[in-house]
Length: 496
Ligand SMILES: Cc1ncc(COP(=O)(O)O)c(C=O)c1O
Image 1 (cartoon, helix red, strand yellow):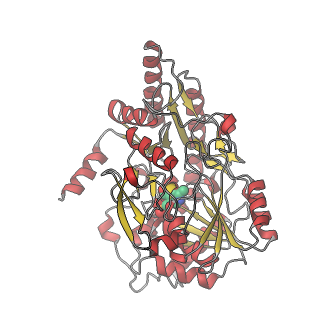
Image 2 (cartoon, helix red, strand yellow):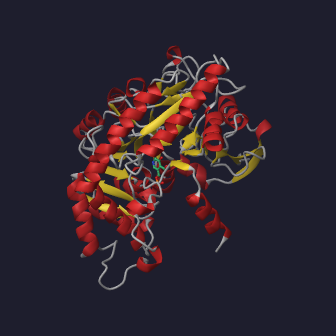
Image 3 (tube, rainbow, N blue to C red):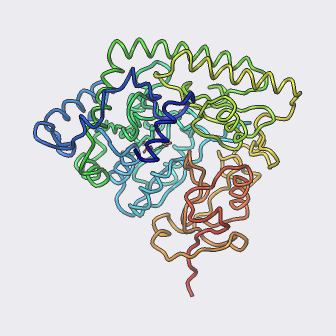
């Protein structure tokens, strides 16, 4: 077997507890359907055609739509990313304007590049004390809609990676009054239709909703679903773009995984397991909440219209997010999903069992005891040795600091060219020491979550550079660039 396979198998057989995606948590005894090679085909007689479904796939997708309460649902085999690309391309004509939350995933930016779109950014609210941003307020969206009557669609990420939901009902109402469709990147919300904790974007009235089954439900990596729920979206156009962005040889292993996952979630076993999971999760959150030097983001602090409790967003007193992440991995055999400067994100799912939650709690309780023994008294989650990204409430909105509203620690973008225009231009590498003032030719973000600090076509300001350098100093790799780690950034060539 190959080295890659050997390494995967070793990880699979290790004692590391996966608090990361995929949501099946490698619980093969509960969710597997045997040897994948035995069922690995693409379109052959009797198995329908994903791009022109008329048989077994059509039935499976119709069942999914009925369950999710959507007019029509589409299986996606290239992740939420391809659903987002198709949704953006279907809703906004080439060169058009999109009202888009700045905290969106890079796939949304890719969609804007492909369509040559002009973004009008909506800034989410900051989450005071946590160095992150959360919900987009309905008022912010309404005001932007009044100021930019020429936008062709609205795109919101809800829930965010951290589980924060925007008031989609009101945002949809405001957009629909103007005849505009709302696309919701609910990549992290595929489980919402199966519990009472938060309402799904479909039931809030969103026109197109993209959900990654693989992130929060027991389904294989890359599996996702797109729901259409509106007459405001041209179905033919949407289906054409789904063909463009998806492989012409869709994997039946992936599609069977989606179908099995949805049947399980809708069936008695799934309902029972979900109840047990939610009750265990609430208990775990309560116990973590009782620790004195470990902080758990609560729905109250997060703001927004509701909060996805499946996300455990955790910080530790006196430690950076990266230090906490490394300790969980190396000392306690717990693999989190991601970290930022201030916190780690641990993903839970219906596949987690009481023993997994017990192990996580014991690790956090042990850290808490040790921190108490060391008499740690520094502020929660401040980056070691770096400037804190934790803006207090007095900076909320960023007006006093030049930071983007809703992005504590992140600079407000100075857009010179649209992302699409920038990608068309000639570029050159520029040493970081002399790049200030130039226009970026590439993205720069932490991955995950893939939310750009800098997008192509935006001016590289001193603040942008300070944030990116601070990430590197805090052990967080800047992604999206060709060679940031080597001290260079791609910039647009200046015309003579
Ligand atoms: C908010 C958000 N949207 C979209 C995506 C893309 O999802 P996928 O990996 O299923 O393509 C991600 C991936 O992490 C994400 O975090």
